[in-house]
Each structure stands twice: as structure tokens, then as C-alpha cells.
Length: 267
Image (cartoon, rainbow, N blue to C red; front, side, top):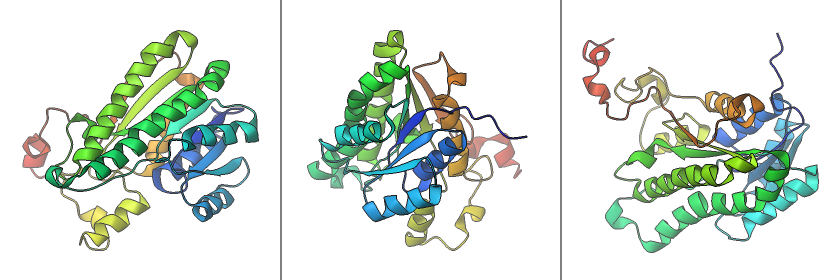
């Protein structure tokens, strides 16, 4: 049975869509019937992604660290498709380093790309989203709840993004614009696989992880994230707004997987 085209007739902008989670989201949106603006930083990578994704995909480039780029990206999307129904703020910069080693430049870059850019994209998209009664899905991180020792700037930026999602949901709910925030756990993107290999993990490392790290027994795939994003972009998720979802193997705030009964019994 062919799955329902929940996004038929809609135009969706996905930032950071030339690879990884963003590309999976763009692909799913296209499969659900949408037209998609595929944003990325590098022109050749965007062109390659658009060619692979096929009809309905349109490439747009822009450095989100530049305060002018968000409005330009939105304008290019509307110029191409004539409307804008949904935005997925997926692009992010992950700057690794201990708190004491994170200087002002690194902190500012994290905030510029991970918080300011989504803020300005939402501003630029606002009139179009009002006209379409559209929605925004912000891709956050479980690090927003505290974060890792080597991800202080990133964690702070994702906490700010979560607050922005709830703030805008409260402001614009009466105008029919919805905001959803998804906090992702550890996702097995191509970039993450390579990054961990560079950190010294062996080939096939995702299959060798301890259950205390991935309680579900396997890492989350980008395609799994994309299915959830498509649901919240579609009309089936109305009238919910301001929803914050933790997309981890299971909701674990306040839990220690190493103290889990199944974990202790070796299941």
C-alpha cells in the first residue's frame, strides 16, 4: 500500500540538507509529496544532493554564520516555489572542547549558527507561514538538558533553541503557526560514523556499542528521525504546538541506563 502523501502541495525549507539528517528529512518530505528547498553551505554538495533527490528539490546555499543569509535563503525559496509552508531548522555547528578551552569566538560561532540563524529564518519566514498556517520544526539535542563535558557551547546553544521554540509557539499559536522542537540523541549519520572513526573507534563500531550507551540496542538512523519530522510538518499533527520531544532510545531524564534492571541482568 502506497503511504499517504501527507505533505502534498506544501513547500518545505530544510537547512543543512545536503547530508546526514537534513538530507534524510528532505528525502522524506519529497516522498510525502512536498517540494523542498535543500540548503547547504557548499554549492557543489548542495548540487549533488539536489541531483540525487530528484524532482521537487531546489538547492540554495548560504553561510548561516552570516546574519544576512537567513533572509536570503527564505527569499530564494519563495522566489522558486511561490510559497513557504514549513521550515526545518536542522543545520548546526558542533564545536567540541572543554568549557575552559572554549573562547569567545567559538562560543559566538555556536550561538550564531545554532540559535541566531534559526531565529532570523523564522523572522523572515513569518509572513509566509502566516499565509500558509504553516509550521516550524527545530532540530535540537538532548544536550539541551545539560550536555556533555566537551560540548559546553553546543549544549548551551541547544538549550537556547529549545526556549526559542516554546517562546515562538506561545506568541504565534493564535495566528495558526505551529512550532515543534525535537531533541535528538545519538544519531548514526555518515558524518558521525566518520567522526568516531577519526576518534579511534574501529570499523563497524555502531554494532559494538554497550547497552548503557544505546539502551534500545541500536543507534537511531537519520531515516527514523525524518519520519517523525514529516509527521510534525503535516496537518495530522494539528493543533499541537510548543511540543518538545526527546527522540532518544527511551525517555531517560532522571534515569541511569547502567542501573536499569535489564542492563544489570545482561539482557
